[in-house]
Length: 224
Image (cartoon, rainbow, N blue to C red; front, side, top):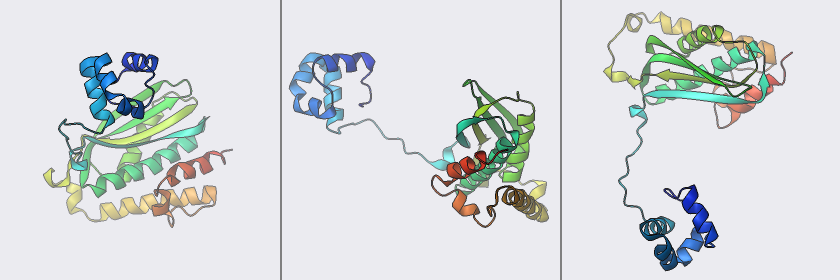
């Protein structure tokens, strides 16, 4: 795969016996002769030469933070979808916190078994808490059609660095954060009782590598 080599050019290269990057490296003069400027571009890329300016990615410049998960099999269990939204909301909040971001809204994405995708968003003030993300996403879910679901996605949109925001009432009421953490622990306790796995004790492990996907698949297979 070389950037800029589209389907038609790739087909012409294939007809000329050029199937790999090494083929282009070993036939550089023929490639330039056959393809002109496009050939020169392909040869440069084949040798790793690219003078286009690089724009580094900075997480704090992101305009949204999201996470989605595709079930191995479609599910009609709203219980599972709600629980998946909870786990995704926690992950989104964790990722935003690592980069000092807060959001101005919440987004829910649902892909049904027929691959039709529906995305809904709602504005919300100073979004950074997983419980807030979870509550808003559930409200949007309740308004969507109830049928088999393939994918669930949750996001925080209109993100800004934490230092740029205006203080809110919640900044001065310290027990709000404690109450929401307790609410989150209670939600995880309900998951633990439902699936026989201590979600609170293993909260960090759930989000390590591909464990979130494996956890949700474990939950899906135990739906009644």
